[in-house]
Structures are given as structure tokens and as C-alpha cells.
Image (cartoon, rainbow, N blue to C red):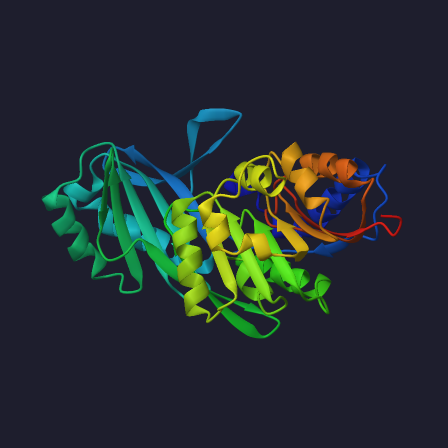
Length: 367
């Protein structure tokens, strides 16, 4: 996304265009009225990555158009990024410019910020970082008291203080706290993330029993939903995300959530009876789990056939999708057993074609 594509005065128009396109795509499915959740038109991204362009004695942040990937677009400010990122951008570039060891071969800066004012800044280099860099970076960091710095070069990562921030999301007036680790998946739009969590709580209101969750990440959905259910068993393949989820469960005081490190395909194979239940699932008590709801939040490829077969065995399905096309294919596969009773669009990525969608399905009465 180019900086000039962020035009707040056109936000409502682009949102309506997304609505129209999603409606067209899903036209041959039987769906309820679409609930639309708009983003803030500016300062909605809590993370951003910029290339660093060197030009003589100057250096600046740059972005690139996919149609012309060789021509840098100078980006001194970026309206999509959080207010804190925009405040940090000029201060950081000024701090680096006159320190040769920090400036030399610097090719990218990544920012990760929170709603509570924390920031994690990663400096990426085309050279080895060493003790000299470490000393200079520590001196520079003194001018950024609310920031944590990381240096990266090939096969090396230097953490000055820590490699994570602590985010707080407010969901129906209740605060939930999340560790967010550098280079791990987190929802980029905090405002929309809060709306997604509120919607998930709304559609599961009045339910009880057990929840099975797949692709749980750092526990983003698991933790607020835990108050709805007796037990939550959540699975995730990323070791970093699993570690964060376990920490987040603890700091939020949730005693009824267990996270298992396992790929969704392996979980589906085991629960479909194709393989023996592995020790990790048995330790989590999956053999005694009787889920009333299954939550899936897959990557863009959507659900594989085995996972579709697994979730069709559960009465209610909460499906969060980042790709409407694969969602449509999965809904067509589930149409013989389930119907969609709630349907929502979340504008996680304004000014792009990307759409985040949520559907809540219930078993057909004939089933």
C-alpha cells in the first residue's frame, strides 16, 4: 500500500466497495444480513515496516509500489500507522543518521506498538552487528524510554531489553492483556481486533460446555471466550505463539484454557480417528472434551478437507476468515450440515482489497 492511497475522505466509499464485492462473491450462498464493522480511517495499524533508503548524506523511510518495485517512495509519515509510530519515525531517523555504526548498512526498520504506549523497534542490517553496535544502540535507546530495541543481521538477533510488548484490549468494558512478540503473528488493527472479540462474545452468548479452538495464535480469542465455556482446548503450530498464549492465559487469570502445540492437520487426523490421540492432546484432556462450539481462524488457504470433516461433527462453528474465497469454498462444503446464522465483515485493512470475515454456523435441524 502506497502512502498516497490512504485518503480518509474516501474511506466510506472504499468500505462500501468492499461490501459490494463481498456480497457479489457470496451471492449464491444462503446468508443472513451482513454486519459491517468499520475501522478508524487513520492511525489504525499498530505495526508497520519500512525500508531505509540511503541517498548521499541523507537516509529516509521508503515504501514501494508493487507495480514499480525499484522506485522508492519517500515516507516521512504514514497515516495508516499508529500515532506513536508517526511520532517515533522522525525521532529515530534523526538518532540514527549521525551515528555511523547504527546507520551503515541499515536497510529496514520494523515498528510494533500498543494502545498503551509501548513500542518495539527492530533495526535490520546487511552487515554483522557487534559489540560496537550494541553500545551505540544502548546509548541511543536512552532517548526512547518507552521503546524496546532489537538489532538483526544474518543469523543474529541482539535484544537490548526485550523482544515483546504488552498489549491491552478492551472488550465489552473488560481489559485483556497480551504479550506480542517480535516477528510473531498479531492482529495489526487493534480497534478492529476489539470489535472482532466483542462480536465473538456476542454470537456465543448464552452458550456453555466446551470450546475447541484451532489456530489460536497467542490466545487472542481463547482468553475472552474462556468465560463463556467450561473448558477451552486450543491448538497452534507456532512455538512462539504457544509460549505467548500460555503466558497470556496466566496473566489474565484463566484456569480453564489449555494450549497444545500441534498442526491443525494432525489435530484433525487424531480427532477424526485416523491416527492415535497423541500424548499432548491426551494431557490436555481432549479425550474427555465434548465441544459445543469449535472456533477456527485459519490462514488464507482456509480449512483442509480433514478439518472440514472434523468441525462438521460439532453443533456450532465460529469461523474467522482472512480470505473470503476460501471461506466460501468451506461454507459450500459445510452447507449440507450447517447454516450460517451470523455473518460479519471486519475492515482490518482499509484502503486494500483485503477483508476479514466472521461467520457463526449452527447445525441444521434435520441433522
